[in-house]
Amino acid sequence: KNIKRMLAYSGVSHLGYILIGIVAAGVAKNNSLGAAASMFYAFVYTLTNLAAWGAVIAVGEASGSEEIKDFSGLSKRSPGLAFVLFLAMLSLAGVPPLAGFVGKFYLFSSAWDQGQYVLVIFGIINSVVSLYYYLGVLRAAYFEEPAENAPPLVVGPALKSGLAISTVAMVVVGMVPALTQWTVATAAALLS
Image (tube, rainbow, N blue to C red; front, side):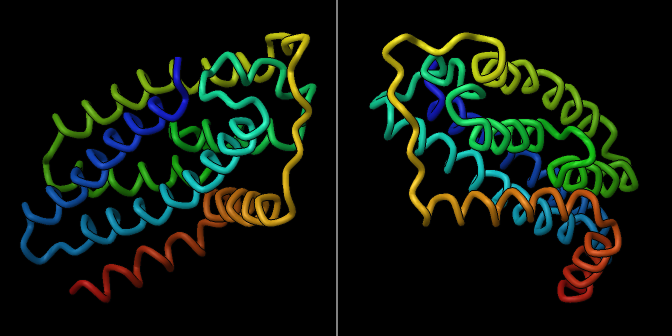
């Protein structure tokens, strides 16, 4: 019910994803792809979390609450903020073509190549389960009506800029494979 608590638990889960790549790197001593995938995923998670937390802060400041129910009707109160939240939640869940999907793809691929099938299967199951929680936030934002006394949402220029940068980066990283491949290859080269 509390979105900050949900995102904190989500952070623990995403740390587990990062550890999958580290395990893959540890299995094969000369394989830096797992560690590079972990570094890339940490970068992607940071971008996505900046967008998610920015939207949460904006709604929290307006409503004075951290409950998911306060996101009801966000798409009618602030369509731009709702769209940022939409992309961030889907990226955290690992839905293509967003950055979160690409990050999980590299992590799971590196672990799969090293024979860590059980970890990959648990990671995929966890991603599917997490989708339920992320979609709960989006259901409130897009399919529930705002409360009658819902305060207007005013987003300051600094927060707007941060949300725009993190959202564009989250989409670009997910949709430009050459950039992603270069980033992972560079990280792997630095680690080897």
